[in-house]
Image 1: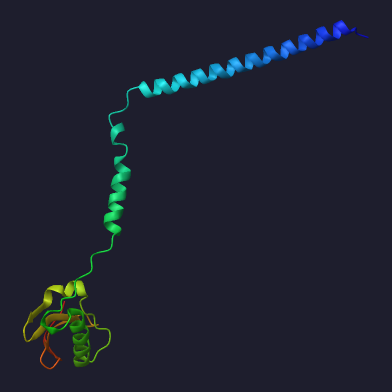
Image 2: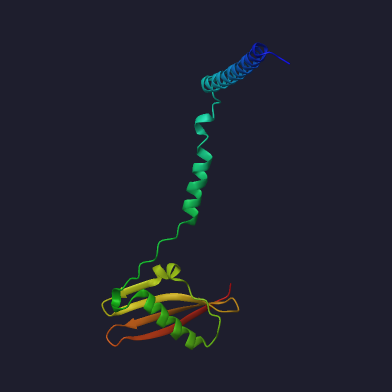
Length: 162
C-alpha cells in the first residue's frame, strides 16, 4: 500500500496535470478566437467587387415590379351629370339593348372601357356604345336618358363583322 505522502503527491501530480490540460485547452480556444477575429477583420478590409454596392438592387427591383403589377387599378369615378349616374345608365341601357336584340350572351363594355362614351347636358345623358353578339359581330347603339321623365331609350345603329 501507498503511504499518505505518496497518495498526496500522486493526487497533486494528477491535479497539476488536469490544470495543465485545462490551460492548454483554454489557450487553444483563445488562439482559435484570435484567428477567427483576424479573419473577420481581414475580410472586412479586403476590397469588394465593383458590383458589391449594387447587391440590393435586384431584390428592390423585384419588389417594385411586384407592387406595380399587383396593385389594384383605381376605380372609375361614377359621373352623375345629366341627372343619372353613369353606372345606373349603363345598367338601364344594357337591359333596353338586350330586350331589343333578344339574344343571350351579349358582352357590353365594362365601366372603364365605357368611361369615354358618355355625353351629358342639362336635359339628360347619352351613351354611345357597342355590344358584342355571341356570333362575334358588334352592334353600335345610342342610349339616351331624359331627365324630365326619367325614361331610357335605346337605338341600334349598325352591325359590324370582325
